[in-house]
Length: 300
Image (cartoon, rainbow, N blue to C red; front, side, top):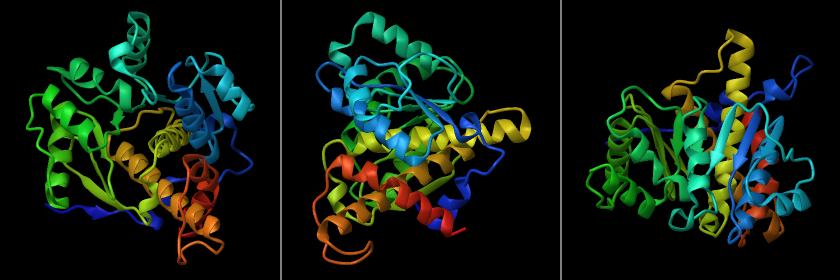
């Protein structure tokens, strides 16, 4: 099974360069409910990913407030209007309290786009089991998380050995659960419930590092909120269908990959897209996201 490769032009066409008519809501407000006492860094990384991608505002409502504000003082640590959510990064469902589960369920039932990462993935098959229609959620599993998600949904959990198999698996999962699936890997696969699928090739393997997925989740939240904000201004409705959510997910994966490559090149002491490259940390990727956004916009 094949899928369309996502390009710089497609990424740039999904983004928007703000002009004099924009405000923080048309640029997108992201709600981030991530992190835990055990993993506060995940919250910092997700908020940084959202902020560096160009969100108009990032609201943080999770338990790592102090850590987030130390690193990102521009974050608004209060409830309020958002246009997309990021949940689950840096959390463990085995230690999640009933109150926290209720909070996550409330976010997932609110009708807004939700990026569902890591420790919130277990709620997806529970809430989508037997449900009709399409949930405006983007799930972001790596291979083992996708296998667990598929087991819970009654699907074959075997991990495919080839890209065609991964595309077929992501497409089947998206259709079964009514969500957009971003299946992480050297080639990221994004599929939506209607059967459309795309691939995003990572330009560096140094992204296989702790915390980079948290940055991706935040980046995706920012892209999604921005698309929702612009759509609301143009049409009066911020609703995003599967095709638009797929474009958001693929664009975020493209930005994340090219930010990683740029950070690796910078640390190796030369311009982006050159050789040799160097190891990177997750915050290096977040800090390079503005460069990737500029590159995508320049390609349009």
